[in-house]
Image (cartoon, rainbow, N blue to C red; front, side):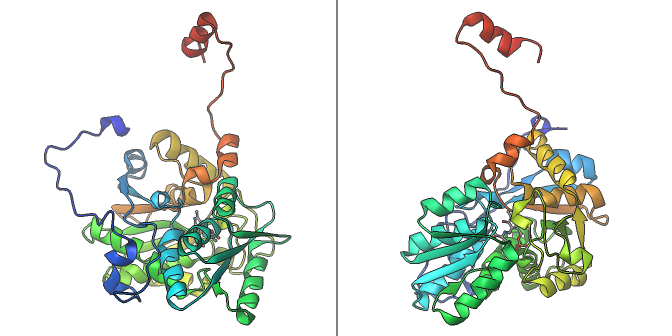
Length: 359
Ligand code: F0G
């Protein structure tokens, strides 16, 4: 089964998607804002929910992918950031700061640029993907490369914001959680309340917390299955990991700030938080790209790796959240694929051989 086997249905009922409306406008009644408040938006949210025929076949259920990489800066962080930065501007802030494995930094930098305020980010040295670094720099943020890991960076920014008038936009900030819960609204609406299980990568654990809040507000209770990378699985091991390691740099976190909330989300939804290896993450990453046509970043593929490894407790309607776009991390993509580049001189014969010859 592949995409080519899917036929255009005769009658297409196109649901209103809310596309082209900033997320805060779309869900104003459910967010902590009032008409007339400042709005800092890049038209985030309203992301696609894509059927995944190959995965569905493999799992024996209907699997869809929530494409959060379709947000303006290429990750789900924009949902929280439109709220965090709009609130910061409303409250008179002139600067925002975050610790980040890359995506929060890129998103904060973009929304701060849009708002005309300054942004500083602290990132673990040598551990953030090139695309994210490129975004953060081009948006004009001050980038501090820390000789340390994400958890140390977060501790330091929390101390800094205790003593300086700079707004912290990590997911300790409630506006981040509020904004990110809207992805649950979209899935709930998109599936007419039919979702049974959600698979999601877990790092600092803000996003799983947000989804659970969102589903609860909709009166829904799908099972939430969160996945951590083997070398960075504090929630699964029940202890802080001092030196987290994984190929999925976005979730290379040893002491998640939303620890209790994430455990509660898994428990109360009758789901679980489980572990997937780097090899399983990369296998899912390649499968998504080569069979579903969907290029996500490695951390995002943890959701699919987990579904393939553990199943979803018999659920028939499943959504995997693809949290970020593949182009964020070109190095990992180039180092992990089965494709090859064929060198060729500019002549007819060699070109024919290169294109049509045995691979
Ligand atoms: N997927 C991606 C692509 C991420 O960037 C992150 C987190 C997660 C999943 C995990 O989400 O932290 O809410 O559990 N990235 C943060 C950052 C930590 O700094 O960009 P979470």
